[in-house]
Image 1 (cartoon, rainbow, N blue to C red):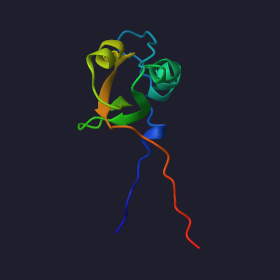
Image 2: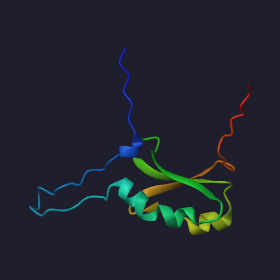
Image 3: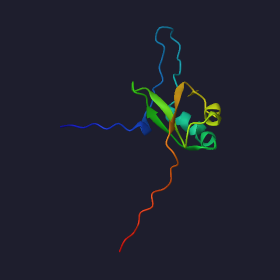
Image 4: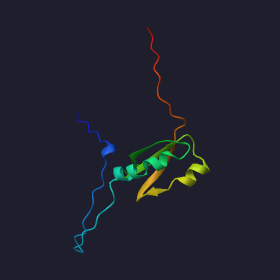
Amino acid sequence: MLLFFTSYESFHIPSYISICSGEDKVGPEDINKVLESYKEEIMRIPGVVGVYVSAMEDGSPCIKVMVNEITPEITGKLPSELEGYPVIIIPTGNIAPYKQNKTE
């Protein structure tokens, strides 16, 4: 049995060239570059605990924002899309580092 794994961390939307018009057109910005451009600003919003590149159910790329809870303040500060990529808000609750108990 063969298994294939895809890392969305390296998900890339290629640029396209319009052959019909003969003009070169640059397509969407790479989603990872878009995320990098906005990550600090998004993480400064109170209640946001993480942001990452993911995919919609149809396989198209999106940016997911993890929040403690969905509030009107958060939804009012987050855009519905960034440079053409949908922004999806995911309520995760508080995220804290895992502390492992050491037993001897």
